[in-house]
Structure formats: C-alpha cells, structure tokens
Image (cartoon, rainbow over all chains, first blue to last red; front, side, top):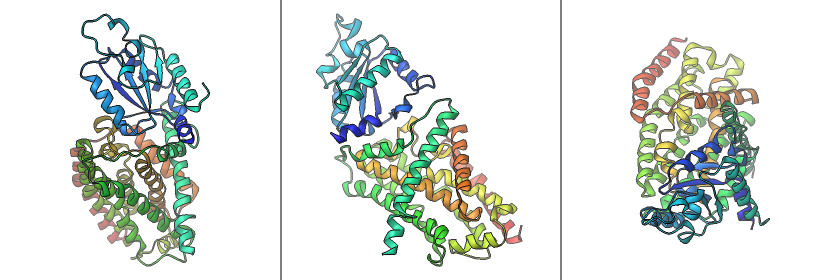
Length: 140
Length: 299
C-alpha cells in the first residue's frame, strides 16, 4: 500500500502514441506549459518505459501498435498505471465502424483511467490525473 | 568509529544527500521560474527517490547482470567518498592526508566510468550510444580539469592537501583573484558542467534524442542509486570548486556556483559530440596550457 502511495507524489509518464491524429499529443504538451504546469505535482514526461509510472496511450490502436503496447506494458516496472487518452484510445471514437480497426486499448492491457474528449481539454487531463491519484490512494 | 561518522553522517552520506536534494530542488525551481512556471514542491527530489526505491527493478535479459547491478552502486559509494573527502577538508581541517587532492580528482572520474559501464552492459543500442558519447566526453574534459587543478597547485606553491590549500588562500588571497586563477576557474567550471551532465554538455544523456542514454534500461532502485549519486555530486563538485579557487566553502559561495550552473543550463542549447570535441581540444586545451604558463610566470 505504501509503495503505491509513493507513486502518487511523483508520476513519471511515458507517452505511447499509436496512430493518433496528433491532436491529443499536442494537448499533452499543453499540460506541461506554464499555464497548467503539471510539474507542480511532480509529473514529468520520460523517454524510457523503464522509468515510467504511467503509460499514456493516445490514438486508435494500429495493427503495428497493439503488440508493441503489450510488450511495453510487460517491460514497465510495476506498479504501473495505464491511461487511455482521448476518444480513440478509450472507445475507438469515429473509427469504430471502420473496416481496418483493431481491438480497443482495454482489450490489450488493463486500463485504469479513461480520459474522453477529441482532444480532451487540459482541464480534463488534470481532472483525470486527480482521479488516478485518488484511485491509487484508495479514496475512490 | 569516527571514520564511520564522517562517511555516513556528517560530511558524507546523510549530509550530502540532504544538501543535494535541496540543491536539485533549487535547480528545478529556478528553471521553472525562468520558464515562468510554478515548479515542483520542496522535497520533490526526495519523493522521486523514495518512489524509485519502492518500484520493481527490471534487469535486461541479454545484458551483463553483475556489471549492470554493480555500476550504480559503485557510482553512489564513490561519490559519497568524494563528498566526504571534500567535506572533511572544509569542516575538519586537522584530519585528511597529504595528497587527498589527487585522490579526489581521480575518484571524480569513477562515476563517469560507472555510467559508461552501466550503459554498455545493458545491451540497448541507445544506451551503448550514450556510453560511447560519455567515453568521448571523459577523454576530452579530464585533461582540462587536471590542467586547471595544476594551476591551483602552482599558485599555492605545490600544496596537495585540500585543507592546506584552503588555509593558504585565507592567508594570502583566493586563487581566482589572479589572471591565471580566473582562467583556470572558468575552465574548471566548464568541466564541472560536463562532469555533472548539465545542459551544454549533457550529450551522453540527451533526453530528447537518445532518451536518457546510459540510463535508458535502468529502473527502480538502480536508477535511484544513479539519481542519488547525481545529487551527491551536485554537492561535491561545487564544494571542490569553492575550495580550490574561492578559498573555502560557505553558503553564499555554494549558492553562487549553483546559480551559475543553473543559468548556463537554461540559456544554452546542447552541443553535438563533434562540437564538444572541437571545443575541448582546439579551444579549451590551449587556453589551459596558457593558464599554466601564466601561473608559472606568477601572474
């Protein structure tokens, strides 16, 4: 229990982009800018999944992305949180009736938090982060 | 018994980790203020380390396991040893031994060697790339650092004990107040940036191009040891600069050197490795020879 509480004070996020239209990715960068500044909560982006406490999945999972997402999840040191970011990652969005869709993110890896929106506003992202922290602390 | 106290508590482990955590927070906070952000809370580096020590440690399957595990630990132990020797010279001048300056300068290369070994042993291509870059960095900046230390040695009439060097500078004047001493201080400051892996010379880590370089496969407690040794070096290296050039450590001098490091870090882009090699061998190395000649002439 204490192990998980330590994570809530410094969440290092690994960003996995699997076939997004890049709107979600730009909104993620917005959260790091001076207006919202999530480093206040000890959150930062890292380049390696071995350092990550949270894997942020954006975009509609592609045929090449899905096995790699599974591999990355297995490589990440546990405990790790998976966040499905945006409508596509949460529920396949407008690509649901498409002929070349693959499975949703939550059928490949266990997803802890969904942040809907196309793209989600920075306020929605911070709200999602608060929900992650509350879930890890066992308040929800 | 006293020696354990020196190593584990006062100038050594506990003191340097706590001060290093403060310095790291200070660095991140000033960086955030320069970028018009709020910045992380106080003790954020401590939270980071606690979190890393409570996470799972993943060891790569194809790597060399012993080297992979030992190099962060050796890096931490040796940085604490350097911090202890440097701290003893300031706070307990009567102990310490003849020639501890040479020991300190030699031991300051070992954390870099551990980064090279750790990166090369993890069997990751990006980590190997980072290790090779770190090797080139060490080979180029080390001789410049030795030359600037030699200037101090000449200016203080051949003293090799750190506490004697501090005493000599309080008797006469700090080394930095002479021309050769000032040049040597600038060179030592530049090499200190490279030793600490700060921005103009963070070519080995390079978060944005090779995503952490040698650290890429480290996780959990082993990454925590690397973080801790960085915190300790953030204390030991500025302390050494204060003692060699400014005539002893005090809070003001330490903060000034820290702020200089942070300002250089925030106002410079990262060099390429070829640019750094050119800068080190064509620009800095002749200047360091000139500084030695000036020091022999008594300037």
